[in-house]
Amino acid sequence: MATTPPRGIDAAGGLAALRGLLDRPLTSYYLLLSCAGLLLLIGLTMVFSATSVKDYAEDGNASASVTKQAIFAMIGIGAFWVCQRLPASTYRSLGRPLLFTSIGLLLLLNLLLAYARLTDQDSGRIGPIEARLNWLFVGGIQLQPSELAKFAMVLWGAHLVARKGAALGWWRELATPLFPVVGLLFVLVGYNDTGTMLCLLALVVGLLWAAGVRMRVFGALAAAGLVGIGLLVAVASLGAGSGERGEDNYRFARLAMFFNPPDPETCKLGDCLQFYQGRLAIEHGGWFGVGLGKGSLKWDWLPEAHNDFIFAIIAEELGVIGCVVVLTLFAVIAYTGFRIARRVDDPFRRLAATAVTTWLVSQAVINIGGVVGLLPITGLPLPFISDGGSALVVTLAGIGMLASFARAEPDAARALHARPPARWVRLLWAPLPPLPGRRRRPATPPAGRGSVPRSRERRHDDQAAPRGVRQDRSRKGTASERRR
Image (cartoon, rainbow, N blue to C red; front, side, top):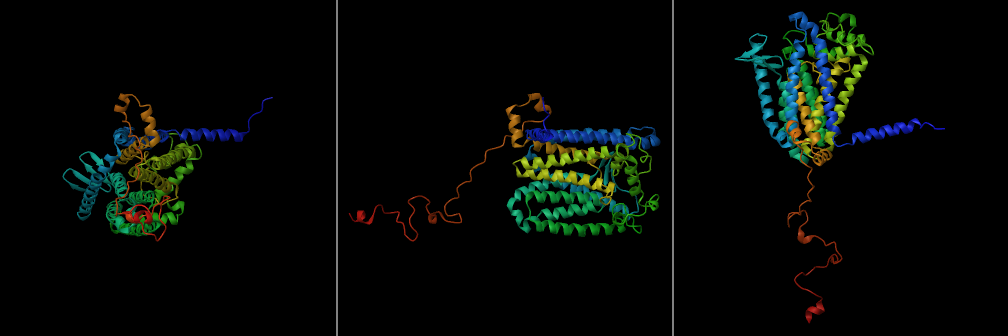
């Protein structure tokens, strides 16, 4: 009579099979592509669901917003295709030009907004360029400079830290020029967008953590970050961000609402309307949701339902199951990004992969935490899913760079060279990555330059002279033989 094997053996076999799948050379590449593709598909679906009612009510075209988002998605896929074809040397050379470009755009944005404040206008304009809060409009093109600043900080910071190497143990190496540039970006971005500044802070922390910087540096960064956040909250009363001079400080109100949640009955028509409606959408969805497209909070009840609070629409229409799927996909992206950083040999690739992964995961955590009430509301979009062109294009470009690094893992590069794809596939998709080079033996230091001079090194063979006995290299043989 046949007996069924115990469940422990089946579980062990399943774990062994999973471990075997994860040990395959191109696992990181395929995990990255599948998770990013699924999140992009979910994002387009939820943008259509969250905006179709309002778009139809305004101009009779229910697919206006999702069509625009799909165009940016195609541009982002093109950016992904280009970025996964680029070698690490190109990313190193692009870091500084992108950083200067993003700083210039941020300066232009803040100067135009300051001019608009002085002249009591809703937006600042100079020629064809117009500035509104966090966006620059050049003709009909909308651009968010802070999104470009994230990608630029990844490239420039990874190149700088990799070049300094072990010298980062000295404070002066961190003080020039990393900390001044980071501080300038924090001021230019955080004045109008505290959420993006927090995302940049997490990116820098991840970069320095991967570089092995001492813990006292992170303590100094934490103290400086708390002081900076306090100042940014204070300047909201002077008109920073979407604040108005003489009005209530909206940043302080968000913090106060998080630490001391108000009565839901007082939130229905007050400043905490978004806070209340977001919780109501999550409660309404339950375990399995009300059905895709059947949510009621998007009927102009929930502010920014297509952008900052799109996770609440997911919770209402797809329920806890849909939320778990989204969270699982972001968790797999986090695992894959850190896996790539652990497996690549090049220090620049390791640092850049860690920084990009920290940026995407921290932004998702800040957004979802604000929606469900675990963190204060900051106004950050949810990567891949929220409506927004600049954020989607830059996010897919970062995923393309991660895909390039995944193909450059030593095992993946050897596997691709062992069985190379067809030539037309390499031309249309991605070229072969470079094979990992052999480690060179350390060069022998020249005489007289080491810590111990060559002339004073002790011999480690059997002919070594006893301590205190002087060797005469000019004479051969014993003393009796020399007298002969």
